Length: 144
Length: 144
Image (cartoon, rainbow over the protein chains, first blue to last red):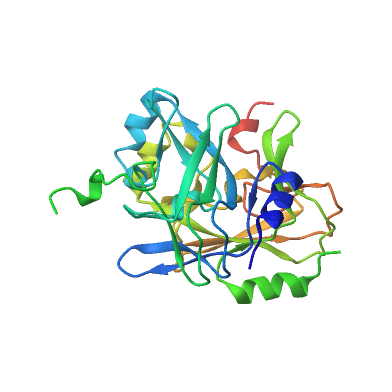
């Protein structure tokens, strides 16, 4: 069991970190996804990664590409966007996600935290609506 | 000393990995950079990260934004580009780099390997010309 203490230690070690128990693997019908290769306690910070911030104008440009599916809205008014490094952009969407993300607009970083206990081998999901249980249809699920 | 065996073990564990001894910190005059918080042997694979591939058309679009400074040319003819995840996009440039990157066009991943012994606390650099010692001026160094 990967304990919160370990996560806390890694956070203390550096502003940015990715727990080495995270794996990128193929997720059926979803392309690549992030998986846990060990159990993880609920409320464990599993990743803190830097982001590249795009201006409102740049966001409109980038949204014309495949990056539309990867960027996150950024800033308190959500007009800008960011490309997240680490594994942040690799988490698939789930309307009942087992992880959540938090943004630090000042430090230009995103934190991923578990919101449920994770079992070894489980895929880790975030809810692209930001809130782990928000059932609002996301763009690629419209009309289904 | 972080040994190659450990790196190999991590590689075996998953296709993708980032050694937990890598840190993202501020690099003087260069914004953020990747640093080693332990000694690393030469020829150690320190990171294997996924990339998001852009078509030739998408590359031209994305190059109009700040992402121009982050994307890598992609494909044997170098006409496409990729946005690299993990910490790959965070390594600063050096004409005498202590790391090098390798691209796997089929698996859509990039590998970062040390080409020199690294001392704890050292910043890790790649040469944006691909070859660790290529002295060709890079775009942000033109006219200096």
